Length: 237
Ligand code: GLN
Image 1: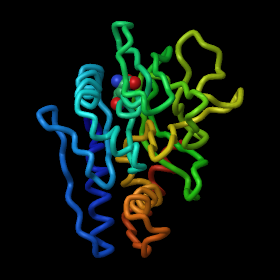
Image 2 (image 1 turned 90 degrees about the horizontal axis):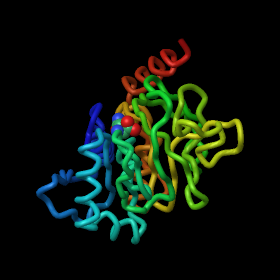
Image 3 (image 1 turned 45 degrees about the horizontal axis):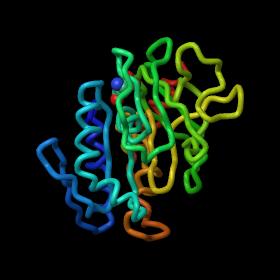
Image 4 (image 1 turned 30 degrees about the horizontal axis):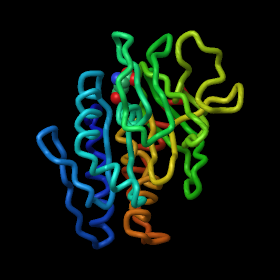
């Protein structure tokens, strides 16, 4: 899965490693490939119902990510990727498709689709910069007790609320709106963008975890700072 250029997340991780003098290989996993458990970091993008169901079935039958997560390997999952790693997700015909059960979340439809810029104040330790992304999803993801949000929504919808439920969903304190999921070594979010292009701090957090280091030499990328400014301004309009 990789809608809205989510497969760019792996390119960004590789480029940020190269700038620091590391080499890195991207292993693209299709439905024809066994899922390896030997990667240092995994990224999974978004997709629509059919792709999601196929991905979920394939990832269950070839449990390389599950073995890697059990060892604490970092995983970034976007939108449908987040839903697939949960307990179950409801698809457009109203049936529930099983997820991988790695995240204590469930996903069912909202009353209306959420589309637009998403701005989030991060709550994950190590993140200080405002998170920016683009969301486009029908699903509302509710967090169970083992899952923590990635942050609080300041603009946009984020995890959302299932249709017909009062606005308390998302595992959050009543009245607040949460975004994303953090559980063990897994980070999941509704932010496309790709999210790592817009949020270099999140990219470096994943890389630090993958490399087992506390920090990496800073890299200055003026185009990224300009992109962040533009997107954060667009969200305020
Ligand atoms: N099909 C899912 C939803 O609408 C995910 C969409 C996506 O990944 N952009 O909730």
